[in-house]
Length: 380
Image (cartoon, helix red, strand yellow):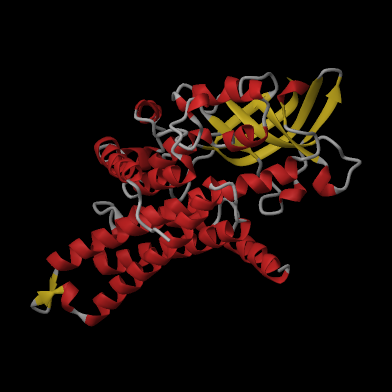
């Protein structure tokens, strides 16, 4: 077993972090405060091969695999998790096109996203169905050579800025629940679509999140991804990859919390000694470091298995569950170690504290991950 990154991945890791430092740092506060999306940075990231790095070169990607993409997400999230999401999640939804789409769909949709020209979205969550993905209500009725789609989607990443979305719809209502869904590519400028950006989020405020209403939206049946009725299984496969990416966000944020806290406690004095000299301080730093290293192992193994064509749904759920917990834990300790300074926006730790909580919510709540892991353990 070799736990060492190869030279290519080491270079990608270094380049990603340097890019984030150069491009994110100066605008991070402004984007957080003003809820500003960052299209210019997305295009620069594409020029550096950071968008769709997991996509094969024949479709415009860098061919770095899911481990490479994980490392990019980790490094960008060390600087700003929201802006990093604008970069890596510009391909959100493309996972299903690559794995299940036709050759024509892959060639039409993947290269423009990798070039930074287009943005995709995964339109799955609905106002009354999030974790319960089998509870989605959006319908796509057949009408000649078209689907006519009606429904509502909620909390959609890239929802108001995307060029197209991959939407989960009921196409076979007469079938059993899990066999009734299909994934359909929907151009965002299609007549009947209304998109409203959601304001006032607690964290990742530079990332675009929207509510989408679809009313008699007509798209050709050739936009079906894979086979009709396979949408639920395709979505579960989708989560194998995206949950690992969310865990990578958690890893990057947690690492930033630890590194910043170490620097602060070495400089800050209390009772005539550096704050880092106290045993309680050392305990907090130690617990943060242990959790980070354990999380790294879960994430890198999950991503490596994806690249081997052997996705492990349970391991991905474990990485996502532990990632959210680790990020929240480390952000909380970072604020505590900074004391009053950790509570004001002059220091980044208060932003990381706000950003961290979403990692326990999206791509499956921590409760949903527990249910998934528990079922799989009992099915062995």
